[in-house]
Length: 533
Image 1 (cartoon, rainbow, N blue to C red):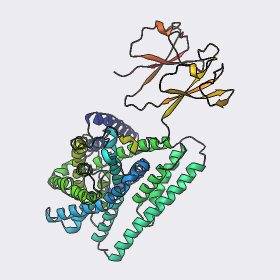
Image 2: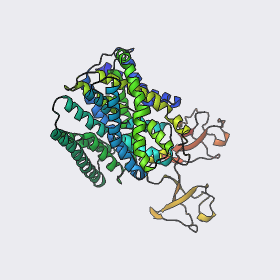
Image 3: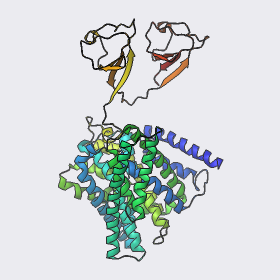
Image 4: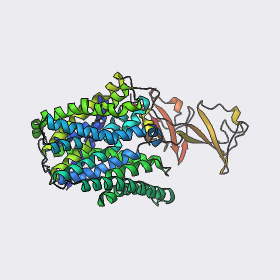
């Protein structure tokens, strides 16, 4: 058990390091997770024997629930609404067309049986939300015509359709095919999935808005329970759990919830953890020695999907909406396959109706090629198609780009010797871009104007725009001891590098914003900023 825990820690740290490396190299992060799993697997360096498809299917299905839930929860509906119709058409009719075209290709060109070919098409028909979200964010693809929102809605909502087709085809392969069974299966999947997704979202939203949790962070744990319930309840009665989880996510993510920003940030990190788990586990499950046997078939399917099935489906569905051809080209190329396809392939391997792992290895190869080829080249294709718009911000399409104000507040106490004491606000020289938002005088708030005169004891609250740049800001603390060379020296006397600055001093529980005349004393905690150059 201890060794397994140590192995888990090593895997997580490796994934985090790989995330940094792959982002700098411009490679999809999820590709690193898969390759890491393959290196740890039975044909890899550590030779970990793992071939339990049933266990893998259960773990990956659970992880996929959270990926689906976050696909909705992290999407900002106000940005996505103008392209919602086209996105939903792509996630339903587009998935159906892609599956049909791919299935016919597998049958007529690759020689598979009709139902087997259609099963391959169904499993590979959806695009992967985790892959698409990861690339849009990490590469900051600011696309024209709200294309990023279109891709987010499509990739987040098309897995349920692929899942439903996979279940129906497995049912047909088991010999239980009938018009009545198929009709009821479609009805129950859609109706129960939609209804319970809405009910759970409304109920959970009401609880979050009206119930005070006794411990900070319990609202995030409650939301985890809501995501699980949104999948489990409809699934138990024949509904589409993935559809329910997505609907619950998008309805909850776009409600006015207390502490919403931290909820989104929590699920962003939690979703990243699920991506690590699912892609690593899938890499661990695959036998690389088996991949060369299906590589030729996988390459043919991948090429057909990328350059014929997906573009043809997109063209047929988006042209009536007068979508520009260069937008259609980017949408077509952004049809990345990912975790959902491999999870659905595992379902076929454990199903008595099929019970063969060859489809799993074919799909795994196709996903690997898709992430490597399309994922790496999507930014370049977007630039070649002149689809990059510097006036757009892809982060606005996610809910952690909060609709709340991006103003941050700092406080300043006016002491007897403070230069602002007895000064009117109109006579004070503030840093451009800052504003005195409120004055707390004797614990009573005062909304100031230019004639407001500051007094000793006033607590001045100053607002400024929040820092949202890409450069990471790191602060370091040090305690001034009696022997420290800075003890009893003014800041102006210190020999510091020109790239470092003391931003705050904490003295006996009081925070001091220093200037050159500030005298450092024994026991001071100095907060130092020094950028990584």
